[in-house]
Length: 113
Image (cartoon, rainbow, N blue to C red; front, side, top):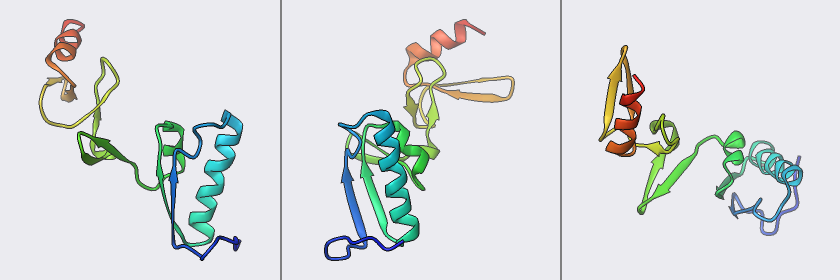
């Protein structure tokens, strides 16, 4: 589906595109951006705090302390739910390695084992 976009850009930049939208309109916009990428062969770069946009993304990066990290490469702290790198505090139990954001979360988790 060809869309009329000014100057026919190959890359679209979207800064917080769903920030002021209700859930239904946010989902509609996410589907539209996905369709633009797929059907018009355009790159769409979205910067957002809206985690629901991950569902339409081919790749998700996390910006933290000035560094971009691939979300798929991060672990989730089982105590607080934060995304964490697979370095630092960890614990192995029953052949599974758990990664933590801090020694505090590690200690809290270890107490439940």
